[in-house]
Image (cartoon, rainbow, N blue to C red; front, side):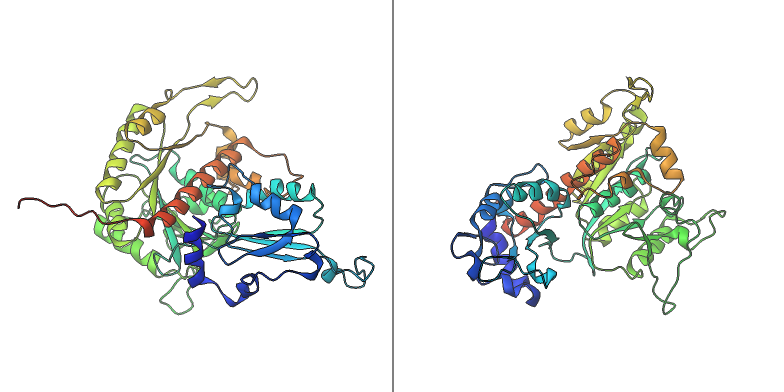
Length: 415
């Protein structure tokens, strides 16, 4: 895997990273240094730090850290002839370690920092994310659809919280509300008062909320009025909304799809280079039937199904903690197993989720400071959304790495 990353990094390294490409030994390290292999070349570190990087693993990462290092930059603390740190220039005296990874994994920072501190590191640890995937659409590297066959299963709530969880891991994330007939993203993100603006009467600025770039038809129409459009008109409006928005450089655009398997879904599948789809369902049979249709539709148009989220999986009593499966038990899991799809999470039915959504403060925000080792107060649902985000990031990473290795099968027939 590191050899593939080296090949990719050789063509994508910027001038800013050039300093990390040459394995130059810092004079302060010559007495006790080890080289760490990265995609941009070997880098010398204090031996204890190098050993931590070589052996560090975490469930967040698809591979050991040592196999994922694109670049490592290290600055030893400045010392005088006697070996004492200079105090007159605090910036130059600060120890600094900067790692560049091909996957957004901000949540590994507390564990990695703790491991480094245990062997004497006292400086600043920074994690940078450089996605090796090419841009699939203008400024967008990945487009992920969040879909369901039926409305009312919590698809929009899932899309918003998933986008936030991906952003919290360090990815640059956008959110497109593709539900032309019933846009709910403005409410979920507290943007009901926002109105779209244009710099040139041709393009539209996205809104910004909690670090996300956001676009919705709800920013263009009166929320009290119904959008009475036929399928082709709605599809064209959605494509304009996507293509005429001035999206910044984004690692992932999460698209909150309308329910069903009609014109809008086919338009998105045929007109855009979609990385994959996430299916949202509840455990009850009436939702599972339509979720199954959504899985079939995406497979027919060659869009990978990245996983299934079973929403409202159970109701948990806030007083005693008893779980009641009011919509049925494990219906989503059984559907996923039948179709060979991963179950990304089983989310509970909680008043907290509804209240936070209505207030424009999604539940995933309870994990905003995941890189703080001292932060241990995390809402369990926010942690579940983080788990979904991590699984998706790993899947997209493998999708990117394996794409260049794919070969064309040649089949000989008698025709």
